[in-house]
Image 1 (cartoon, one colour):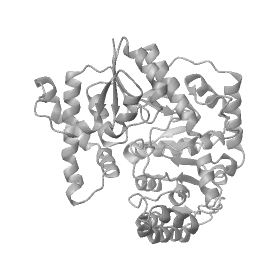
Image 2 (cartoon, one colour):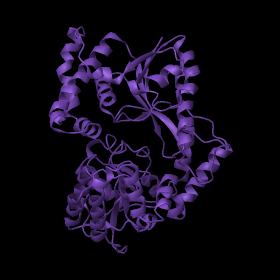
Image 3 (spheres, one colour):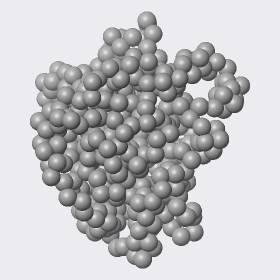
Length: 459
């Protein structure tokens, strides 16, 4: 008999109830959820226990740690607090004000650590399953405590092929759980070939559908007064930030250039923030300034670093904690670094580069398809493919540059097509929209399939 903690996230509960009920007949299943989602979970008639994230922030008089767990308490608390991502996540999800400062939030973190320890003391858990890397304070701290105690933390993640999914284990390792192969049919191969051809051709066609819609709404422009004013009408608080956002856009436009492509360079594509793909999946590099400084310091002589902003910074909501004028000015002040116009063609930048740098971005897969080496600074799903270099230190970067200077182009189709054998598809013929590989519906289908497989095989 197994006991599994499972966070169903935003998955449709009516499609989960049968899966959960069958598993619960012979095993224990506890659902992790917020109290705001309680009605959704209860309506599904799932006969499982429910554990609320909010309760981990409370003090319970009768919860005392036994000697074995009490001896680990200080070490675990230090491990959680000394991981800088804990406070970054705390800042992201909490309004930081005088009576709710980071200083005071450390008390909340301590309570989550203590209550997590007590829960694991009282319950033998085989593993925890999330729908993505934990990136809210309670599930992040709970996961950190679990891993310290040797309890596996599993996540459903998007593979390098964005409509295919796999279950991985370990917050910072994210090793696929199912090593066995899955059957691959003609339609699967067709999708892979179509996706690769799409990313071998024109960049505008390869843009994810959600990004195309944002640009369409602003008539192809990265700044649209009509779109911004429409946001203000829907939510007047945006009016306060609108001048600052516009001035930041103007500053980027002023500092950025259309680069000469004849000299050697590495191109770094900034991530939209805040998102889990950079925090916490960026490991030590949630702050992208750290990557820019490191590359600038270690570039081979005569090379440049080109930095291009993510279009969603201006086509989507802008969080000034992660983009400000100081960042752009600091980047521009580095002697061998250039900011690049938002409108400059991304594929042209990739094709003329010595290689690209990203934390975990899809642009890394695009670069591989276009036969360029990739530097990753986080747990990118494609980090184990040949000619991808995982960077955690200056030495890693220097070694990578030495290999890049000897790089020989090769066809990556077979490597990407092999991913079909290790993943589950969220696409079927009935719902597939030609050349649209990013529909939210695909994610739901893929996740449901993997949860069913994991619980039915009792792995």
